[in-house]
Image 1: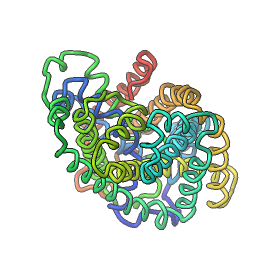
Image 2: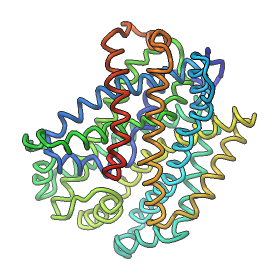
Image 3: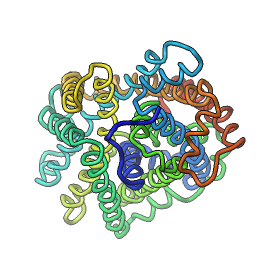
Length: 438
């Protein structure tokens, strides 16, 4: 079960930054600030932090450990887990989270294409001249963002073809610190806007009564779960590139901490600016592609601020796509016997070709709803039960304890088997009922 691949992370920091890069995405930027303000402000942070700790400590750790133990992606990892019980069907089950990663990669690459287009629109002041609504409408029409979409695909593929150390690790080591620095610059600038105080009130004045509402806990759980990129596939593949000497629990907790910092920083950069100009802090694409460009247009040197904003979001998008593409590429390498370059090229080509036909916003929305409400949560559910119920407790604990200063014990067993695994079922069911909670 030892990972024989030469494609491994050189340092713990490189691994953590790559994992953080995978976790930080659009949910941190266009969903978390809105959910925070709408569900009790600072009071929302209490259940959110509780779920982040649980999902980071148990969920991320389990996926990293399964990947490192098997040295492969979800198909091979699930097959190995099933065989420890003498069961068949592991490859079939492992294909489900793989399909989830493939499906998200298709839709996400389109959205990151919109981000790239908006960055150049801010840089050239084209958004201001055209109008934010019209500029976004152009991008989200059928075949409205083809060249930007293609650039994103090619850029991601190029990075991955350089391998784990020279590609994934090296690029994340640059892009992730840059993301935090750029968002920090925006947050500082926004703090000096007249009226920004109302945004901070929206974010942080606690409404303790919200803790008595079931929806607050459901939304906090969903936001935490999906924010950490627990999908039953992506973090497994990164774990497969991890040295046996690394402390998985520590790396998981650091990933969860930095992802949470990114979400809070996004809130500090976005919401006060929106309130300063008395605009609607709605969530989703309208916030990022319409509301914020309107805000930037009213700020001195707003095109510079807008360019910095979209550049930082581009960094978050590319680092997330790298993980999704890597899962797909690794599966093609193992199943078809392709070289790394050929596998990445094939995966990228398929992702681009299918994505071409869902560039229209309505089609993309329907596509992402199916993938994020049904496929991905079910894949995460499978991963949780594969790791903590199919695998013998002693097997997964042995892997988790490698490189760790302290061994996991009975508390970890209880949290993993009877809390975390059960909550993945709850997340899946509630996601269907609510039409998405992540």
